[in-house]
Length: 296
Ligand code: GLU
Image (cartoon, rainbow, N blue to C red; front, side, top):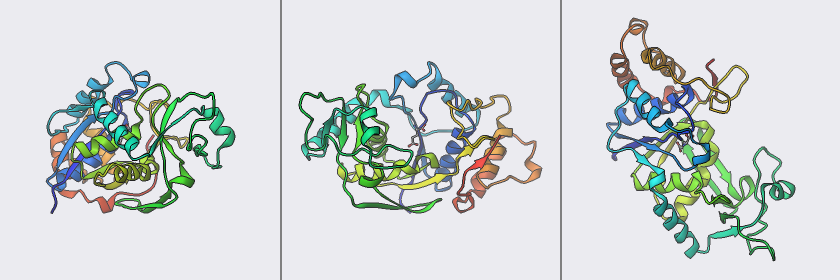
């Protein structure tokens, strides 16, 4: 079996909530059940959206829940040089171009009718006279990007139709998540990505970037997303509750149940270590449900 290296990559925009715990538990168990490594990467790419102290709180919470990560925690704020060299490589290949469009202009001329704005290609062949570069985009093609997700099954996306040329460096000078995640997953040698299905839609863009940059494509498994009673994804924006640090075993039990692995009742009042030991033995990605589930 090829070596397995998984990861958990939270953004420090707030404390961990049940939805992020599910991603951490799924990626951890999948890595450990393959005798693999499990790394933690703090995706602190976007200071205006971050909460002071959140990165430390996230690590403290992971430790309280009994997670043991391998090696040093990587912070994306230390990785700007690597993102810049990836942009240089794309520039050399003629794949990166400056764009002067505002969100409003894109919304006015977008090609897609869906919830996401599809970039209509306005600046692809050069900036309109008198306009200045705001963001940097990568040129996509109309080829289908297909992959077999280990939970969701076969997925295929045509980037030109579904996303358009997408932003890698934003108008505010910050590197985009899509670029940083691809550069760092490759640099850290990640072979398997297990994360929430809210990122399923980003995966084709990430595979496309891997191909442009000559990087290997890892395996993907997208876990069901936890939603609240009105159907919203648990997140900082929907005011999801921070994880309880006092009774981690109770919440871990709920996360395992959510992932299709309800522990036996005799473990009801056990400690976190016995619960992990049971979960390590019984983890089976095939038992994870595909769809969104309510958890509040
Ligand atoms: N940092 C992203 C988030 O917290 C996750 C990135 C990933 O797993 O690819 O939603």
